[in-house]
Image (cartoon, rainbow over all chains, first blue to last red; front, side, top):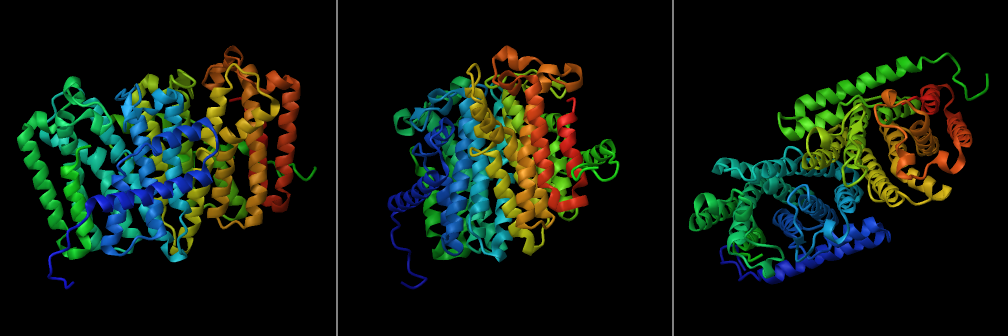
Length: 303
Length: 303
């Protein structure tokens, strides 16, 4: 096939299944070699292996494919990022925060175990993520790149990123946010780690600075679109299909895109974001087929 | 004078004050350049700058002095380790865990702020610690050593170390533990991070494998002694001087060394541990003067 031919139809379902399987198997392997038969490890495993979408690890791998190829360091980073995402869900679900009883179709960690165990299982998954980053075997000349990945991810996941986003989310409950405040909150709470996922995969696969800049634009836009779609699904989605309660945003008085813009304008906003994201991939041509398909998945998903 | 006494009068108070000032200033500098005027950062700063003993950072620096000299990477690691220690205190104090109201002479983080903020401030300090490790400027050939430090510290602080120790501590409340179970719990809960503190300082100052092995023996023994002394202080200490409530172990039915061994045998056990720790430093001769003095501090401290 020459480079001007239209890309072949892309089997997104197959792609997601394959990549999800790679991540699940890598996580299983890590669990077997690192977890003991303790209550703490059981709780960590319970939440980590609770059939998540694995969106962040898949984005990490797809970014690697776009600039080079998936290697063991990319897989390690993808697993570590999923651990960070899982810890954030465990802590967000705690009684002192969102007080959610259901997550990914199962009782939340503090319901299944207890609150102390849930706090500690979250702490342990966050800590373990950095052990996994730092344990990935890298050549001496690539150690600096892994440090850069750790720096990116910890910045994105910390008080300048995801955790500040969660603070803003909690503070905003029952308060009318402006559209800008809502966007900022989501850029921090969800966007930052999604950006870091994409950047990590690209960095570890040898991506150049300019390639990574484009990928970060892509990630920023699909990250925000992901959140807009989340809000839409909270209004329109099916609780059974999503594995968590719906309609909760409205009953809690949360500011959401549907509440601020209306449903139809929210859908249009998400579509515009996806369009921008796709544009940012232009420099990669056919190599970004999987990232393009993932952008469409973000907006078309039902859970 | 026997071989383990400090060869010259050693001004421990001056040493501790100097090194504590170095750490406090380094932490202040980090706070100025990384923290925003947010509730989250205020809570992080509140707990981090609450006049702690800075034992772990000082041990990290003293280990560096023992094998080489203190450099900016050692200071960065010492600060990061203090962040990890502080996060663990914030989470341990939570209502779902020890439910403590007083820490370092001040209201605990969840009392001063609120529970959600305390969970997130702890999460953020833990995450930020890894940003600090990964941001320390290292030469390309030393990047691998920093990865090793991150690996050591995350392993020590995670589900194979400190967090598992906290789980065992919670599980043991109201249950009579054997002496061995108590030692294991403390080796995990306190010992692991103290060992990693010492190993980090030595690694980043160019220590050899055999030097680090000896330092780890030293750290393991003073770590356990530290905990034995903690238990003794909980019985005998002065709440005002310690900045936290005393007598709490007995009222909670916690297994402690004084409860299992009696006060006088507990003191003897601590003294033996310190003796072993001092022996492990023999290979360093006069270069380990500060570590020797610190071992004596651990057993003689009043808070």
